[in-house]
Length: 155
Image 1 (cartoon, rainbow, N blue to C red):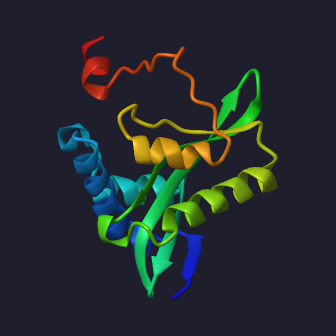
Image 2: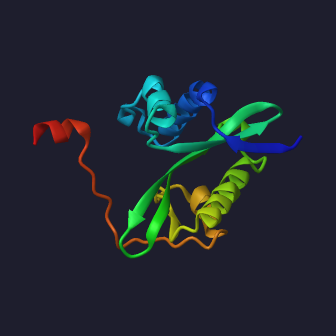
């Protein structure tokens, strides 16, 4: 059966939500998920979308997705940040992740961005090996910094 990669639609949000939750479990951080299915619908398909998504179909069902948005680098210019690439565990090994990343590369080229970037956990060796095939650069020098909603409210 062939893989179909397409732009996500509002009707895909329930399966995108399931993929988000599966990824959080895999990354050992289900307690970190603060969004909801309703927020995903509003924030991706509402009046002012904050993200874009593509989905990977296998045998007519969505089995994977990638969520991305445009960012800006004063050094590289307009960029695409990939927030998540995830494939349901039972569908891994069929080429869906590769098809999603290939589509993101195609979108990045079409948009003529200065960089396509994302993060990977240092213990996720299968993902690191996969991304290495794309000539990705791994930068151990930079430290992730964030202030969550809870902390913002305390400031």
